[in-house]
Length: 183
Image 1 (cartoon, one colour):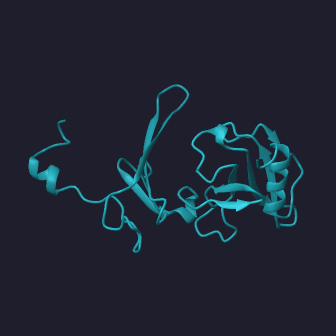
Image 2 (image 1 turned 135 degrees about the vertical axis):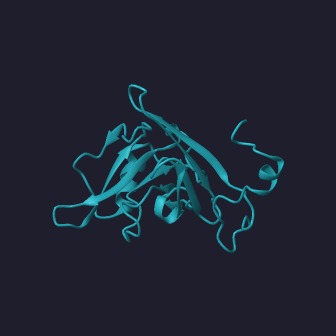
Image 3 (image 1 turned 180 degrees about the vertical axis):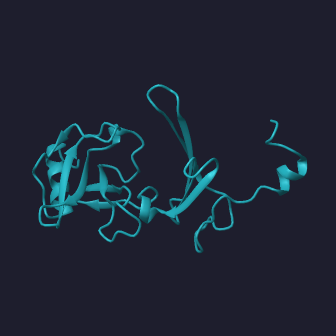
């Protein structure tokens, strides 16, 4: 424990909150968080990174601590920007779980959404019926693509290919049809 516990005083009095909940959140003034970690290692094991995520699904604060700008750096943002910890949206009998925006403040919203049968956030690829996401069409307008299934590695099992739609709802309809319905 060397380095972690210098003294009883440090353990009890010198630790402070990592990130703050928003005013009005029932957890405001507490350290109640969903705490998870992401570990990444490159193909030959010569580089490893670990990121700790603290998220509040009530007020939407999301705090990341990891190797962004050097050891121990952090970033605090809101679920509206990263998608995770946002409230899912019901469309055509299925639930859309948002991903991150293409850049901070982009008014087009999240770049992609997981589609699931459950309001509960997906915790493994098998929980996902499909994915819908937008890109810019040839004339600069937003077009929606879709895929069925989820590999957990950024790909889908069946893609809509070159077929795109002018609305997110139409892309969701394609997923529902090809994934066997909303049930």
